[in-house]
Image (cartoon, rainbow, N blue to C red; front, side, top):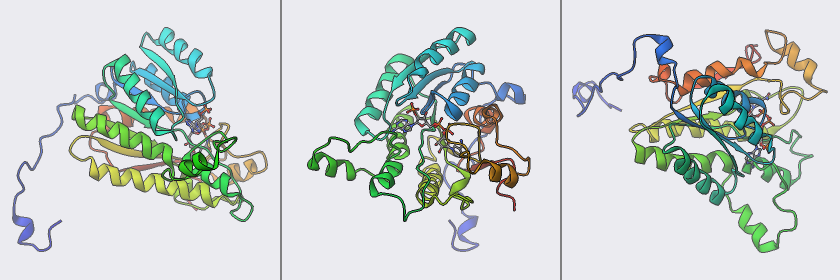
Length: 297
Ligand SMILES: NC(=O)c1ccc[n+]([C@@H]2O[C@H](COP(=O)([O-])OP(=O)(O)OC[C@H]3O[C@@H](n4cnc5c(N)ncnc54)[C@H](OP(=O)(O)O)[C@@H]3O)[C@@H](O)[C@H]2O)c1
C-alpha cells in the first residue's frame, strides 16, 4: 500500500504480471477437463451437486464423506456415467490426522490436487441461551457426531484445544501446503448468507458466527496465498437439502427470497464450476452470495 503519491509512482519488481495463458473463448475457459477436484461433505446436498458438476465437466473427483457412505456408490456411478476418475474417502474434517492422511491419499491416487472445495458443515440451530456448550463446540469444529461420547477427561480436554471451525481451517492449512508446493491451487469455501445477515425467525447465533469466521478466513487466505493460489467463498441462501430451511421456517424462507422458493441444488452447480475453472482467473477473495434475493431487503 502506498502512503503518498510519490510512493505510488515507484514500479514494483515483477509488476504488472502477465495475463494468464488461458483461451479467449469462454466456453473453453469453463472447461475443467482433467483437473483433480476434492469435495468435502459430498455424499449429498450441495456437496454432491458440486461433485456431479465437476464430473459433468470432465474433472476427476475425490469425494470426501463423514458418515454417509452413499458417497461410495455415487462416486462409482459418476465415474461410469462421465468416464472420469473418481474415488471416495471417509474423513472427519475436524480431525487433523484424518485430513492430512486423506490429502496424501488423494495425491497418491490422482497425482495432484487442483481444486479443493471445503463444503462440509453442520448446524444446530438454537438460541445461545438454549444451546449447550457441547453443541456450540460441535458446530465450531464442524463435527457431525458426538465426539465427546465415551472419551476420558484428558482426551476431551485435548479435543477442546482444537481450533474453532476446525474443518475449514484444517483443510485450508494442509491443502495450502500442497498448493504452495505445486505452485498453483484453487480453494473454494462453502460459507452461507448467514455470515452476513441474522436469519429470521430462527435464532442461531453460533452457526451465523461460525460462517462469518469462515468467510473472513477465506478472504484473508486469498491475500496470504496470492503467489500460488486463488481462494473464493460461496454463500448460499436456503437450498433444498437436509440443512436447508426447517419445516417450521420454510414458509418464511419462501417469503423472504425474491424468487419465492428455496434453491434447487442444480442451481448452484454452475457457480462452483465457474470458480473451479479458468473462466474465473481474475477472481480471488470474492464472496459470492447465491440466495434467490433473500438478503436484498
Ligand atoms: N442448504 C442450505 O440451505 C445451506 C445454506 C447455506 C450454507 N449451507 C452450507 O452448505 C454446506 C453443505 O450443506 P448442505 O446444505 O448440502 O447439507 P448436508 O447435506 O447436511 O451436508 C453437510 C455435509 O457436511 C458433512 N459433514 C458434517 N460434519 C462433518 C465432519 N466432521 N467431517 C466431514 N464432513 C462433515 C456431512 O457429511 P456426512 O453426511 O457424510 O456425515 C454432509 O455431507 C454446509 O457447509 C452448509 O453450512 C447450506
